[in-house]
Image (tube, rainbow, N blue to C red; front, side, top):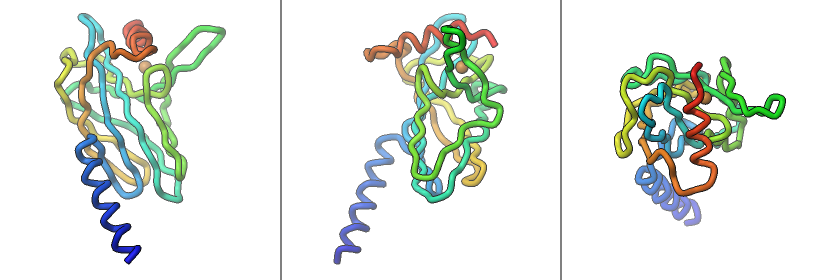
Length: 166
Ligand SMILES: [Cu+2]
């Protein structure tokens, strides 16, 4: 009986996960891939999401493709070097340790869509494929949100991206 109840709970959870804009593959759960509307002339767009690894083996987000919006999608991290906040590309991608939740967000790890083919407009969305070392390719949808959300730090992240010429 306990087992049946647990199954029902899992079903209910996965149903609500769909509404919350989540994508699942094997042991990986990709929560709410989102981008931000770009400012006029802004050549790059940021990408944010949370990846949870429910498995017992680590995996790795190796690369991302999104040919509708960019031919060069990179994985970046923000790091402080000599008191200056800098972005640097992670050519090997991001490790998703077993049991861990890895957050890609403003001011930290993030996806960068270089030389975007058209401006990102709030309310739009675009397709992308996340390529994991073990889980393989996962198709997701990035929702484009307002450029400056009400929370502190969001505007700062957008400003940092703006100055990111390559
Ligand atoms: Cu960046």
